[in-house]
Length: 553
Image (tube, rainbow, N blue to C red; front, side, top):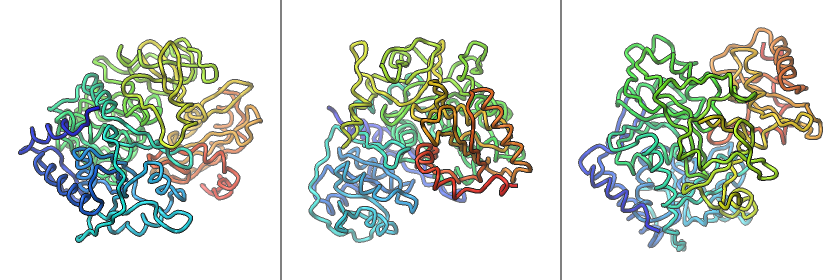
């Protein structure tokens, strides 16, 4: 299978003297790189790797911060026909053995890091005998030393290994082929209109599929211009994201639900003076179920800044499908009449389906594999040229996820619940994140969103509803955080009583334990998703560490 090398080289050469990527820093700093400069930096990376690791191509785990160093390494790996494994730099909160597990599973030649993180990386790579499982190369070392003993050669057909967000203890490795990348990029080009005229502003982490594929690689493969900013800068100031869109006249930019909510919550009216968002044609929101009404509020709020209402839309995808599987803009008003939507689906924003995306989606009974008709909830299955075929080092999970036959076709199980109504897909939650009531399954997200309506200070995107005792049908617990910037609640007991009544009335679920928590109290994946399974598995120890409701007064 042909590699991406020729595609990348062609686009770098076409923009040899034009800006291809801009990297934003703090306090207005911006570094601009032409295609020719990016190629030169990538070739320098290859020379360093060859000198330190021997002849490639290599499998390299990139535990690098956002910015130029990662971008140069990515391009170098692509033109060198190696395999790059982007991961977050090590953090104290990482599960023990996380980086060692990743390096061993991917059979990495080395881990790339910054010199300041080398000790932390080496510590995470140690095995039971105290020895690192692979070499560590500090890419900013002024005099890098030959490491020797590498010798593992990359599979040239697999340029990228992505990882799932890790809602369980350790993430799963997903090898992505050049053919899958091309197919998925072609969908974005066809359905969203990404091309050489596109200007992308990307703040999403490079170690997740939406940031890596959608924010960096697809613009590069489309000959587009991209502006890269740090995720930490967007989280520090959501306004900085919108200002970058306005300054660089971006046509594409997006993120998960929380980023759109942060703009609504933390950007004051006076901060929007002079903000021009009229260039923003593709404001995509995905990565998790999108709460109903969020995008409508976003459209209304920023319409006065020139944002076109039909530019904002929900989308759906996952690392196992390379990136994108459904959702696109539509020319008419995207707000949908909810009168015909099945009960339980009104809490989420739907993804528009085209003929192309609809034929690659199957709503399936999770246990029997039987097809479920439109208007009913089941597990979402996917097929097509973008679908991966395995997890590395996990044969049982590979069989369960990727080896599913139906209608003479192999399908990929997503683990997500949802359904189709008309030309829209509704993603309602995760198959394992459910509360069972007399044999009926209620998505945890539905309970969380309903609970959040009890007070505007509650954050439905930072909550965990779960069953402490799986055999206790209809009984659950709910932990929910306050929204950013929300002062402590005046009467949390009254709010808790409202939550308990509304959830019991709507779903017949008795919430035996409700905790209202400060922001950041719940465990999250590296992409910011709440680890419901972790909370459920450790709720006794976890709950004992949390504040009681009266402590939030």
